Length: 194
Image (cartoon, rainbow, N blue to C red):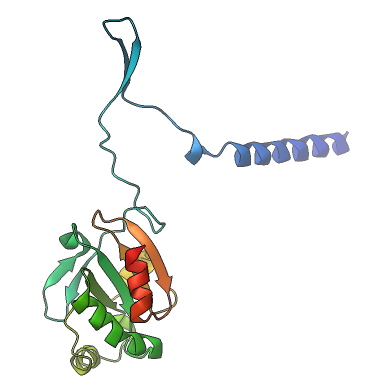
């Protein structure tokens, strides 16, 4: 008798697991705000309501990039939405990171020569001092905004691992691609064209 109870319980759990895999809730499509009307000729027409839904926020291609607000080295506040309407490259970096150091001249050239806003988010929590970050910016004569992620909250929000990591965002604030590791100028151009 106990054997049958165990078999039934295992079968029920297996059946539920299969059902859950086949019918995940996220993929159920609902049609909202539709009304059916008839035209003068008697033909039925479906009118859709306004498409006011914002794209889903996330880290996947086509999703809305997560919003953030950080302080710049100059002490001003900057947030991602300030750059809506522009192509944006968000780069996560640190002064102690050799690949970050290697890509900085190309990032400056990219910022100067292309129609793109570079936002360099420094993982300030991992730095010895903000003075080192300022010296680094002066050494490479960087003209794009350098934002201080003093508690690594934005890096965590964007699931950054490793540095450097660059996120390319379109004019509508949607993620177009994510590149982990250092890039040269040609790679940046390729990502921008995509």
